[in-house]
Amino acid sequence: MKVPDTSKARVLIVGDVMLDRYWFGDVSRISPEAPVPVVKVDRSEERPGGAANVARNVAALGAKTSLLSVVGADEAGRLLSRLLREADIDASLYEDAQLSTTVKLRVVGRQQQLLRIDFENAPDHEVLKAKLAEYADRIKHCDVVILSDYGKGGLAHIAEMIRLARAAGKPVLVDPKGDDYARYAGATMITPNRAELREVVGRWSSEDDLAQRAQKLRAELGLDALLVTRSEEGMTLFRAGGVEHEPALAREVFDVSGAGDTVIGTLAVMMAAGLDLAAAMRFANRAAGVVVGKLGTATCSLEELAAAA
Image 1: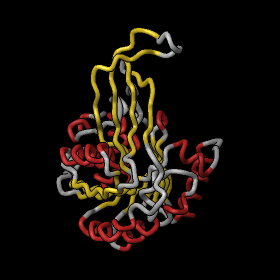
Image 2: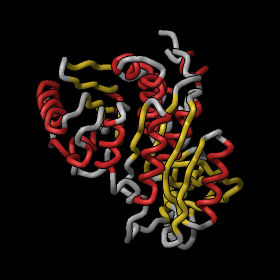
Image 3: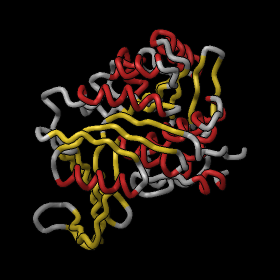
Image 4: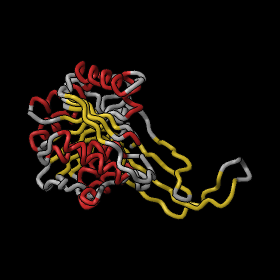
């Protein structure tokens, strides 16, 4: 399957951004103070995370990428802005002095994640209402909208954002969070993973049971489609016309963090390039197979996508 021309594709991402920070080192002994490994850190690395990682994945596939979000007036927020500029992403990040930019620090020893430390504070006030006017303007200049919900408060107005985008004739893809999916009603598609869907529809006993539960949820929310990412089981697309499944690509899984960002980002780029949902899903499955073979939040390039089996 030939990768389409993505150079004219335009994608707008809105959601919760964060900074992924990695400390890499060697583990050669156990601490005398407690039964834990001692990591001698020899290098560190920072990468855009959350909705910013979605944007990075979209940009890596050659699409024109816009990002709308909020950060704290702090060092992590400034660093995130710089990383996004370097990735050729048109980022409009609203600085909120009462907010701390979310930072996820991962300590990695011998290529294995040993510990993750999260720095964050939940907003106690409205953080993105001032951005709604800018959002309404930006959707005119995009082909597809991604709403990336990490449950950090940046998408309090998601129902209005979905309404505005659909009124403008733009497909809206949502990466959901939590157990209340009513707020995503009217979107074009949501992309929960297996565990996230189970939180909402309960455990299923068979493929038929899964299909019934997924189709019921899709109909209740008025979605065109529901895509479930299922790790080693691949991914399944539920639409009114039926069910389509893509098996996982056989390869060594190194790190699944950020794979959902790659999936929704690839779906959006392929749809913006003119592909239908089923074809877009096949490319998203390829891209996911590429990034799980990399350490940490990662991207899949057009070249890697074309080369993927």
